Image 1 (spheres, rainbow, N blue to C red):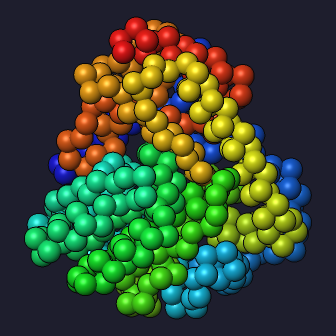
Image 2: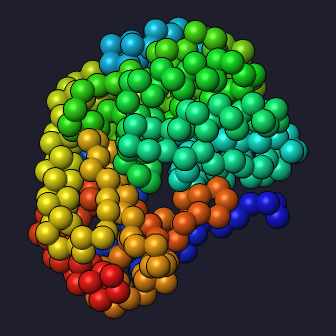
Length: 387
């Protein structure tokens, strides 16, 4: 237990909550106004009448059969991942997939490689098992595969790689096809497993689709994590793991001891929704809404931020990564920003080991367009006071 660290991000959000009226770009949440509440209500009422006994009963640890079928069909159609029931298991959010993988593969002294920076939840899932961490830098095309090759060749205790190739949390970056191919060439040379976390892949709102790593996997090394959290509703905690059958078999054994099964009601509920309503049309609405908000925020940042402040321009996902001048400590600057009435998450918390202090993560999904304009204006004023 001493290895488990509290979430610094949640600590920041507690700090923000004590400042009522602050315009917060700190959330890592989808827009609740886009949840299909009416459609879910109608389809759920119908589902209870028709399949209530099945929905309220115990189910299989692997998952509800019709839900597994839906996932397999969507992965084949949208991700070019051709799998069978032996390759997948339902998980309670992607976070459980991360925790299952860490428990299966990690022992004291093993090394986990992650992007610099990376999702804090993925890193924290590995901490209880005594793993060490090595960060590999990224550029605009994705992970630095030359640096990765060097790390893997020099560290035989690397057991897992954790990556988010699509619109990464926190940077919003997406790997190019060429970088993905180069990554697969590197990892195929080593005895390692890779967790491909893909919660944001379906909310691409610009550019062309790029294949997943799992669709390129010829050696069974990729453990793919998919989720309905960003395309339906995160409170449902509906997610899945897709991997080689032996990994899934072991994950099922662990999950039997953890929680026996994922929420049966929610699985039946989601299938009923997808049978009655067009999920793809709903996703298109999310994509358009996020595109509008992201483009507005970027335009306002271009106008309001000092010229020496740089930021990513994502083609999907939920985040913009801001790089401040080197002398600025984003964590210390947060107090100033809060006085101006605006908030963000300091970027240093997204590094497994110590990272640069002059970065911040900005979320554009949960704030209205009016508040985006006002909030970026306020943050621009605050930045100009120190930059």
